[in-house]
Structures are given as C-alpha cells and as structure tokens.
Length: 318
Image 1 (cartoon, rainbow, N blue to C red):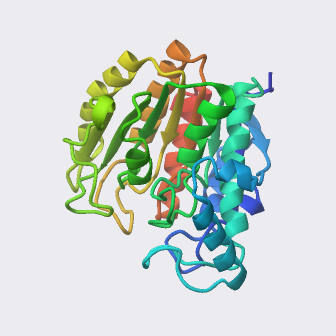
Image 2: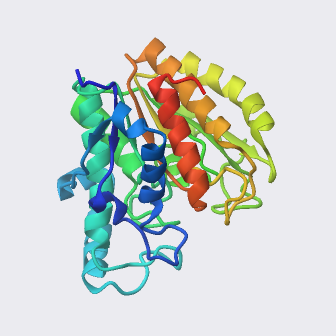
C-alpha cells in the first residue's frame, strides 16, 4: 500500500490540455490548483504521480475510430475546430487529450491494484465529448472511457457516476442512458439557462435503465443550502444502488464568481460531496473512488474547490 491512501496526478503533460492563455480552459488551470496544494502543505500528504499517455486502443473503447483520426489530423495542423465552434484544435491536441485519458486510466489501475485507495486527476472529467465528436472544450470523454475500461478490463459492472459540475454531463448521460448498471447522479445548472441545455429532471434513463439516472437541475443563483438539501435524496439513491466503484466529476464552475455559469456554491459543497462519497465508497466498494477535476474557469475557485476535495478524501477536518 502507498504511504498515502490518496494519489494525485500532476505534471506538464497534463497541464498541456488547454486552449491557449486567453481561453477559459487555459493551460494554467492545473498550476492554480497545485500552487494552493503546496501552500496548504497538502502536497506532502498525498502520493504525487506523473501523467501517463493512453494508447489508441484504450481510447477506442469509447471513442469512434473516424473521430480519433479526425483529432489526429487536426492536431498536426493546429487549425480549425473539433466541433461546431466550442472546442478549437491546437498543435498537439491529440497528445494532450490522450494524456488526460491515460492518466485517468493509470489512476483507475492504481486504485484497483491497491497502490492507492482513492485518486484525484485535476485536468480530467471531460464529460461533454460524445463517442463520435468533441463538445464543450472536451476532446475525449475520459469519464466514458473509464466506465468502459472498468467493465471490460476489470469486470466491474455497477458503477456510480456523480457529477457536480455546473454543466450537465451530457456526453456521459446519453452514452449510457439505457445502461442499467451505470448509476448516474448529476447536479447542474438548469439547462434552460446554461449549455448544453439538457439534464431535465424527467430524464431518468431509457428502456430497461429507466429510474437509474438522477438529473438534478439547480436554479441560477443556487447556493450551498440548496445543494445540501438536494444532496440528501441523491445520496440515498446512490446508497440503495450499492455501486462497486464511484467516479466523481467535481467541476468547480458551480462556485460563485465563475465567469461562464450562474451557480453560487462555495467550496464547502465540494468538500461535502467528497466526504459523503468517501463514506459511501467505504461502505460499498472498498473505498474505491476516483475524482476528476472537470470544469471551473475562475482559478481561485477551482484551487479552493479541488483542495477541499483533497482534504475531504484525506479525512482532514476543516
């Protein structure tokens, strides 16, 4: 067992996933988080691990081959967009996106082989990408790839995916909408007011999976009080599902002051989610929980939210 039960993955190759200094999803996001980790002395309390690049075979367990080839082509030229107008190409985008995927899969492997108990990957949780397309700053959907890998490589079927990013995790939801073993809980700003416009409360899964998905649209301006109130029934829903593994997408764009969203949580929402999910993981799946940074475009916010997640997973009181 590692000296710390929590592994955190950081490095230049992971920070490279960003769309330029002027873009909300810039390459400085990882460093904003890591600077606060060091200032709080948390870097010495976790296992710090290097990013890893994914193979094409690993990516293709979720992404379609034609789309992967399109990303490779755009990555060489660095021109154009990978979708209609949200996700610009840049030179090396294929390698950067592959590093996000590879690092998430390395974290999965470390957890499942007891090299750590939980893990956090700050630049990850790219929940908008579809199997055949980029969307919303997301090139490859590492969340979807993680779910497919847990199933195919490790034989883990019953997976809980919990998402507290301000944006609905549509790329995960619609890819697994009819999957009875993917338990999905997503808190997000109401789609009538924010991209991608999906995740209505009536969307509970399709066919045999009806009732296995919980979409919780929050009104613009919702703060911690509303989040905590909504969390209780969501936790009961997850507890009843008895997952074998938990994925947490803890996007920090749901904090007050984010430049592109309208929720008003503090980092205490993220701390609470991580604390409660850690307990749930201990109860049902041997503590196995992987947290993914997700969105967040105010650098101070993401640094506070993600370090709150780290403190919660370390079991530190605040």
